[in-house]
Length: 373
Image (cartoon, rainbow, N blue to C red):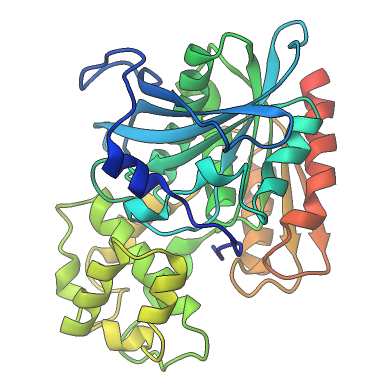
């Protein structure tokens, strides 16, 4: 769930302040998932060798309510191969829950992020990057809501193909941390949700797994920890749960300080939230243990990843020294998927959470192999 360090912050907030892009196709609430609401070119935001377009599209949350999401499409310049450009659907890392935390349309210009897109463009893929639901669109973002993440990723591919005829119906999905969680959720749901598309493979880097197993262990007895990140992550999870299940009484578990932190989690981006939670322990947020009442079952319903239903091959990449997405939890997720018949390749790396850079060549090779197969 760790945010990859970025150099240039996104300008989606200022863009929205200047006015919404001109509609490409009209859509009313309840329109088919993947319907495009608006589309606008992004001159100057292109990754090398590509064009860039921002789209707003319809999808659904995990309660099957129609919701809007943003995505950015990067398409290689030149002539598409027969059948169209294969698609890399990108599920991004933890950035925050508020509108100012959107950033996929800066992938082409931020010094740290250009390397996210460019290798895939050079490998002959179109790159479709969702912002998930509620980041840059109405409402808050339901952080680690597995069904909502999967819907946003799959429907971003549908919407991209609606605006760009040169795109193939075959795609792969890749993401790290929160994006790894979204990648596994997408892989389990892809065929059922979008039978008109072909998911050829899924590559999950340092996925957030088994959140429902360890977050309920928290309570007022948790001492302050040296890194603010953990309080940030917990506050995002609690805020996301509040968004995903608005009828759930989260206040029953929060101290006044915890209520204020969760309120800020709905709007503050990762680095600002780290500053906000500096010196504040998880225990200070909670007035009773999270393993009481309905909290464990509600959290499980929202965040738990499937262990079955994987029709496409999956590659999981894990750093052995990851202190954010814990290796033993990824081990358990992979084992359960294999027991239920999933075709999973599991790779370990001598690194921490930012396994993405080392895993990238293997991800591209895995994607090419299974697209061809």
